[in-house]
Amino acid sequence: MSNTLITPAELAAMPEDSRVIIDTRNPDSYAAGHIEGAVNLHDIFTFLATSDSAGMAELAQKFAADFGAAGLDGTKTAVIYEQSMNTGFGQSCRGYFLLSYLGYPSIKVLHGGLAAWEAAGMPLSTDPVTPTPAGFDIDPAAAEIMMDMEAMKAALETDAKILDVRDVDEWVGESSSPYGKDFCPRKGRIPGAVWIEWYRMMKPSADGPVMKSPAEILAECATVGITADTPVRLYCFKGARASNTFLALKEAGVKDVRMYFGSWNEWSRDPSLPIEEGLPYGA
Image 1 (cartoon, rainbow, N blue to C red):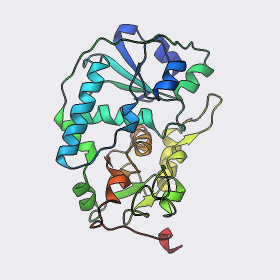
Image 2: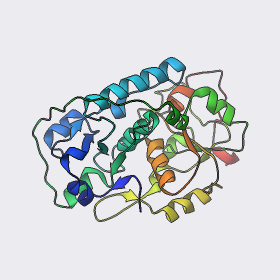
Image 3: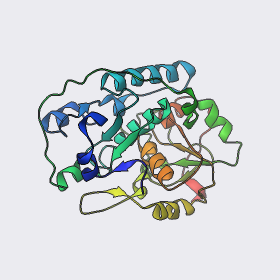
């Protein structure tokens, strides 16, 4: 049974005073209709981090404050959702990763997102929500899942698998980002990386895209030599799509998964860092 993914029925059955629902979509989508009581926190998706110590401190402080202001107090379960698992670049999973990084004790992601909620016949609300501000303590020990640039550089010299989960045009070096081909100064890959496009962690269902089963996820991983015991170091462009894969790998039982959150947005902008260009694998 999934540790993190929650069905619409399971969410509907949770006592209201036991959870805080967080909608990661843009404010217009939220205003047009959201799960009753959900707090809108779109910065989960948009915030770009640098992975130096100042950038990581800013990231932790910002999101501890934002999640606290949304009503998370360390005892309530955070339930995070996006429109559907493949339309928000993994933004609900980015919320899961950020809360995991802060050491928040109870985090769920609505499996299938709002699309699955609506497919289950559940109601939407257009009422504005005023959360009761709270706060919680950050657990520094949880921060090990977050890699900075230096940790990714060091990983190049280890047996860890560096897993690139970006879209195919980024992987083959035709585009530098999802925001345009030349958004970043360089196109290519972190040297030695293997590739599983993030969409491959999901499959169609009657309620929209859902995560594959643990066995199916491990089968995808096997195509690039990753088993449950392989250390995996993830990156994408800004840590959203890689968060989707992070959640998938953790659900599948991969023991040691960490993410380089600065990802290609940061790596490509430092000309001192090595990259692979052209078609991968000498294709």
